[in-house]
Length: 349
Image (cartoon, rainbow, N blue to C red; front, side):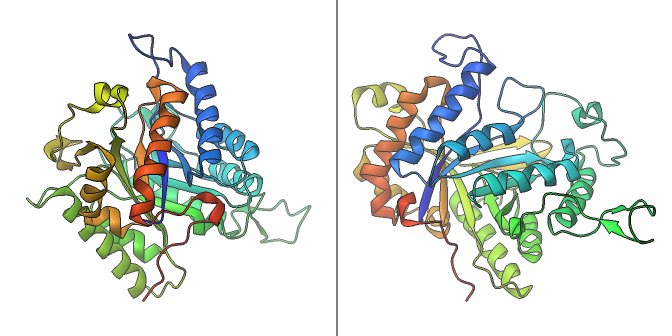
């Protein structure tokens, strides 16, 4: 582990104990959390994207605002659901974001997880999927998105304004943007596919497969499969790999009240029709946390760890979690603060 950031789902609602009563609270607090995390030396501010739910959506305005008010922190998503996206408009937006942030982005995309709406992407106007989960639609959108950010010609030019046969690329174009795109992989198979494409890989606290081995070992197999496929495909840029974890250092009575009784075991369940493995929550005093995380083979294999944060508890408490991890735990795992420069992946050997 070289770096860590926070991953916020952006929940909001007028329920007991929530400091994010509505969307305005959530968005403004997310901006403040990103700015505060930058000042703490945290390496990344990442946001989950959901639709038709009281959670974070439309991430580009938020990421742009954080990037404009910070100096070092990487801003990104974990992940954008490509079933819901116009790939050309997304390419334009992310190129602009990449320029605003001077390349400080880590944009995770994928097919996405189950949403509250049944085939909700069709309400967005994206039809034609023959897969009940929309995976074919997500891949088609992603293929066109990659062509667009690579600067390929997309649309035929008006022959009255350009030579016949001219194909126009989308603008703006930000060179190198593809190197900052990540695929959110939930299986070893998609990890290999991601490696072949030469993308970075995000892996969360959920894998949509179960083999009987502990979650971190299964995820480490996924990381190894990704890196092997990346190398075999001839890519040479050091690739980035991130994993997500629920990690809470217990350093005071309030931490103990919130997280001291959390379970610490992996779970097996079914999501989106797949038998899946859910990673455990880490909640302990710093010395114990350090030993637990050193024994987590996937955490130690990744360059970046995303800490899922309880955003409903407010900015101050979430900054406390990040500061506790930065002060008491992360340095023992190899962490370097954002002032040391952009995070680098492991070399291809």
